[in-house]
Length: 330
Image (cartoon, rainbow, N blue to C red; front, side, top):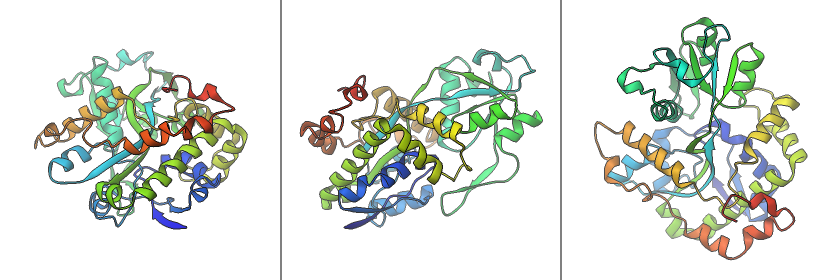
């Protein structure tokens, strides 16, 4: 058995990572994966290229500018290319649709989630850069272990206290918001490199291709288990996913039903998702302009996935459930 590190950039990724591990997918491919811990952005950029950390889940935006500065980051697979955002607001302030937040105070948090907010508003005619919406950021700092500490209020508290008029949320937070009496408005999903990513470095690709192939096969098997074993998956989520609070059966079912249809069975990212995350990279690095020197596809290495896919490995995972490949290039 080979031991590898695979920390996450967001604890939300554990919804899937726990399932992959608990169903035995990594173990069947000879891997013991240390996945249940976070990593901050600086450590990810420092430790992945040297091979001290073999894989990272996430780190979707800052890597483009880093590549222009000599970084060797490589994206090997992507689990989700749709971000199921919902608009959350108070029920008594007249917001019924996204357009109604024009000239309002809109809550935002984090680096990548904050850029998702900026881009979704901008692409829907509500450009924060031209003051069509006022962005109010949740005050938090990233700790050395990759977790975040709030300096003041959470988005939920800001919304309930009237500091902001609306914000975007995903599950399970939008379910918690609805239980608090807030209004949740469904939106068209955002094309985005989102959720768990198999990220590594050219060092791993060149020196340990066997580990890379086995990691990807384990993830692919775990996704197939997630999609086809609903009851077992929901139980794993309830038993293991505690970073966002204990989940009752209803919330775990909502999480499952949200993720299962959009998990990518072949791990290929959507082209619109790559285009959108690249726009965020340009925004994040607009002062230096380094990200603009890198092609949107330059960090993506699909040759492992292509070989696995061409071998029939993925089709075989779904031989009894081919419907789960429909709409995913199957």
